[in-house]
Image (tube, rainbow, N blue to C red):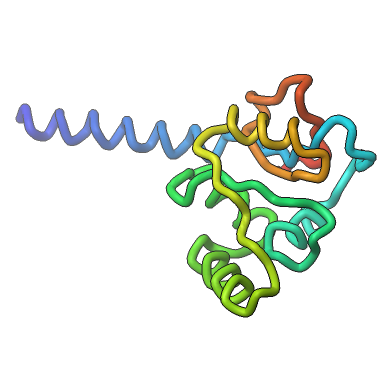
Length: 137
């Protein structure tokens, strides 16, 4: 009986964590000095899939649930597909993969210090050091 209760408690914890990720509102951010004021998800996908070098994309780590949700919403791709795209671009010398940062705070710092950087974070982490140009639903 004790094992059943532990399993139920663990499952409930996993479900609430999954719900929190699903409830996350992801925003695309740029440097406040950047002239961009709005961008569609399709436009953002161009930078995060290496199709345009107008902006320098920065990424959360591969194991980040927000990263997986971002690429699914913006590019309609899972992380394996995104990794394959970047592997090909890097191998052929056509692009450099986005630099990974371990947290939203590091993403904000990188975007705030690089005028043409573009990143994504949970909306709750936004402050005056960055400018939101897209909110994903």
